[in-house]
Length: 315
Image 1: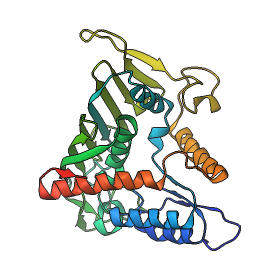
Image 2 (image 1 turned 90 degrees about the vertical axis):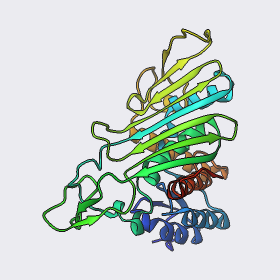
Image 3 (image 1 turned 180 degrees about the vertical axis):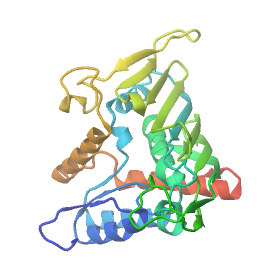
Image 4 (image 1 turned 180 degrees about the horizontal axis):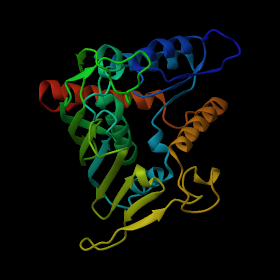
């Protein structure tokens, strides 16, 4: 496939254990790369993909789709313009229930050799990307991870991580269901991140808050077309208001001509594809690239090391 002359772009969206080999082979054959996070199973594999992309001079994109939400882009703009003052603290949550059932099948996602990390690479990577995209670089991490469901029933051949297991043997889960992390931003802010794939009652509960010296911002993916803002008010007793995304925000105008019509998850992937195609056409990176994934992979690696060694890890 990657050697064919009629193929210009390869989308790498299989299980994690396939990403490095497919992406590196594609890049070496001059194909542009669209790879799902977390790219490699670990930092070394992700760096290998990035090195292959750089050596080949091809364009790349990584599946950090949540940063493409117009409300998230507006939050980044307001922070960079100083509208909330000096960033002081950040809170990020990435909570889901897709692995909450104790009889959920043990697919590749739960096997370290096949997936790498668990929720840290799967969901926390999105949260770390959002935190850095909106509030700036993170320089140190202190984390604790937990596996709530230690065994799961063996998966059938075609099972997904939404499937229930059968009556076969129960096998050990080899990576984490949940992580809590304290974050130190290089600009001086502090942060808290929580990610879980086994939180009963939470479905796609992906959100952040950024608090500054003079204001604050908040976004929730489940209300993706809204940004909660607290701006231009007194320090105490300040009220929040809702900014509803309109055609002047991010890429919203490419989808809808009016205000308060939110983009869907799939629309955010369309934006991701558009930016990759623009990168190919212009030769200038646009959107999240493999370089952004390497930055996040270093944080994922630091989070795993912090949990293993029970200490702060500085990047």
